[in-house]
Amino acid sequence: MKEKYKEISEGLSEDKMNKEIKSPCTGYFVSSADGYENVIRTDKLEELMPADMTADKLVPAEIPDGVIGKTVTGVYWYAACPVSAEDALRIKNAYSIKLDIPTVSGEKIKAELYSLNQPTRTSDAVAILRGTFMNSEMAALRKAKISIILNTYEGIRIPKSAVHEREVTRKVEDENGAEQEESKVLSGCYVKLGNEVSFREIIPVYTGEDYVISKLNVTKDEMFSKDVGVVQVYDEIITEGANLYDGKIINRN
Image 1 (tube, helix red, strand yellow):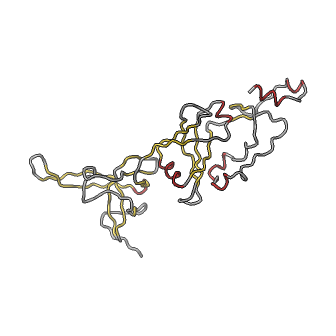
Image 2 (cartoon, rainbow, N blue to C red; image 1 turned 90 degrees about the vertical axis):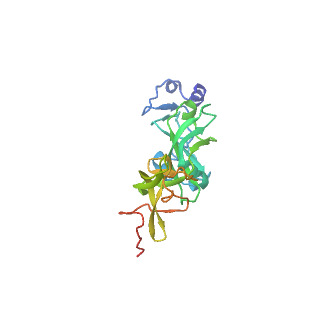
């Protein structure tokens, strides 16, 4: 850092070299500037699309004379990562994200998904990740090869607006072979079967802020009642509606 400051200071008069320079704000000082400072604005991150991440769009601005560095402010840093549509879905379903950036740290760096920008649901995307880890290397980082490490759950993603509770009764045999009834309040969702509404049990493996992931390949022992069944991959889940109940007929008019 001292060498960079010395190089920038060369050619200045002695009185200017000894002059105290004050930053207009507090933060992490980086003794360099590369012209990318305002190319991607943090207040425009949710608008950043794959077409904006090309070399002809990410052109650095000319650095004004007299600039000796910059101050990194705020709690978060952001990483804009172009990803495929398939990887975008994996990132969206991940319950934890870590970044491997060897030039910054030998440890994996915790991050979170801030925004996932896609022109359509099946197109490539820009994943905006953010974190709080900071050191001098991270403060000065502009471009890098990043490995995104995901912990994911495999299952059926169901919005919480589609999740309902229903009491279900089943018949079981006690240790003496006598038949008796057993009831349980199940979490589930309603699906369309033709023009009829049917309730399906959810076997949760992960619960997010606004969604639940239900387990795939459920065994008979894991479901409460085979008469109710569990939600399947190709079920048409009803995400909105009032007064839903098992067997309700849907008026298509």
